[in-house]
Image 1 (tube, rainbow, N blue to C red):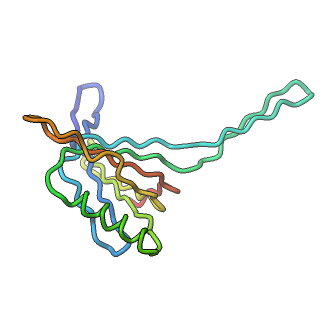
Image 2 (image 1 turned 180 degrees about the horizontal axis):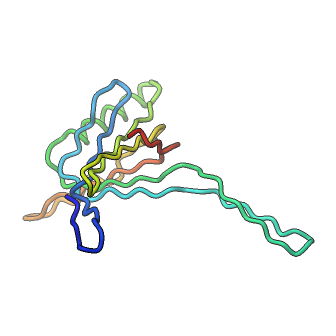
Image 3 (image 1 turned 90 degrees about the horizontal axis):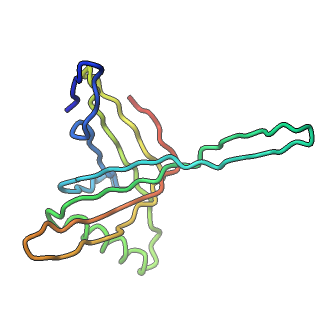
Length: 148
């Protein structure tokens, strides 16, 4: 949960949760999430005028999301197997929505919705004796919208 350092309250990561909402309304349960990284992507514009002025602009182009988790069960692999089967059977594959919930230091809740997420399974993990199996998923979202 958030920690008051005496010089401000900071989030620790344990105060952030996320749900992957599939197009059928079901939530893909990703077990022990160890990392959720989210980065905005932008298109940078530049104009070098003959008047000697450089003009710059930025256009938002979405978000890149990365999730790392220790494997708890077969839910992620089953979802990906169903996704693959649908694709190879000629079905239209669907993007997902990701809901991120953050408990702020003052107890309020902030929520973000990532829409149009092209979500994929990047790494099913390295199986090694006496070690957790780390998995990795990622996606590219069209938008991040504040909902609360």
